[in-house]
Image (cartoon, one colour):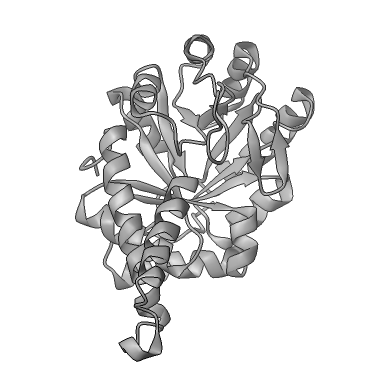
Length: 296
């Protein structure tokens, strides 16, 4: 079957496979609105860096649905003349139906997150998503174990992934694999023990596939770099961009630049601009850590 997604989009398998072979990681950056998307596409193009734009189910609902998000992204690809590889990825799809809806809307990559189900149910549902995605040339991410913290109302206790389950998922045909290795969503608390590199090595040995590090925001640079050397080929970032955006916006307001007596600083296009630039700066710094900058 012919692709349904936009010709400027690519599925994420090729870029993740290339990263895995060459020991770097592609950055997956979640988008939350127009400013987020435009800033990320512009900086990816300016730095010649491949990018995966992630959309959680919550962000999808906030922005108006899969069709609107796909239209926003693909129209920006055209209007900004983006030539670097860009994938549009459903992050933490909670059901088979959500994954199919994203594919039908033109997403080029999806994640089915069945980690909150027993493995047998996770496996069965992932198999159904893969069959549907393959017919549309869409890449599929699956998850074993759970990522700690909260993501769109789903709370993970942080179970470590099982190497045997990883092997079964790879044999099923997933494009890349997420596994719990002590990572969490959201800010990392005091007393966090760090990533479990022994678990990562065992899962990588069993799977031999590009792996995904969720909860990438806030992990120390040395741990991120070590994880990449051990098989992490995709790093997901959301919280770090949100914090940078909020801090830059707060500074602008605290300096009174939004007050009417200081001109039209209250115009949303001006009010949101410092956060827009902060997203670009954070992307540039993190993709340097990941080793993907300039690898388009």
